[in-house]
Length: 225
Image (tube, rainbow, N blue to C red):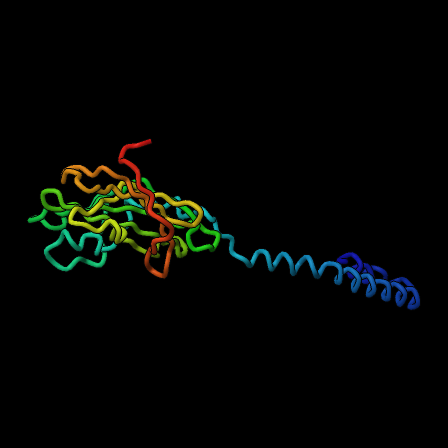
C-alpha cells in the first residue's frame, strides 16, 4: 500500500488520463488493503491489552519473610497483639520475654486454586509457642494482589467435635481440589495428656474471610500409614 501511494509522485510525464487511471487504481487498492489489515490490528491491540496472570505466581513468595497476622499470637501475649508480626527466616523475635512467646512459620506451604478464579492461593501454617508448652496454631490462606501477598482467610480453632480440655494441634496442612486439608493431632478418650494418639483430617472451603468445615472428619491412629 505504501508503494501505491508513492508512485504517482514519480510520474510527472504521464498524460492526465493515465494519471487519472492510476490514481483510481491506487485508491481502490488502498481501500482494499486497508479493509484487509484492519481486523488483525484490532486483534493484536485487544490481546496485548489483556494482562496475563501466572496462575502459580504465589509459589515465588517466601512466607518465611512475610509479616504474619498479629492475632496468631493472641493467646501467647500478655498485651494486645500488634497488627502484624515481622518474621525473618521463618521466625519472629521473642515477642513477650515473660512468656518467651515466638511465632514460627511452617516451611511446608500448600497451593491450590481455592476461590475458583484459576489462580493458586497459598495455605500457610503458623505456630505461636509460649510458656512451658503452650502452642497456638493458625492456618492462613494468602492470595496475591499484584506482587503483594494478601491475607484471604484464616482458621484459628479446631472443629467443634474436637473441642476438649486437651486441645488438638495442627500436624500438617495440604490443599487439593479447591479445599484446604488440615491434619489435627488429637487425643482419644483415655489418652495420656502428654501424647495425642489420633490424626483427624478436616476439610475446609474459603467462606468470605474464614475457612468453613465441609464433609466428614476422617480419624485414624496417629502414625498409621
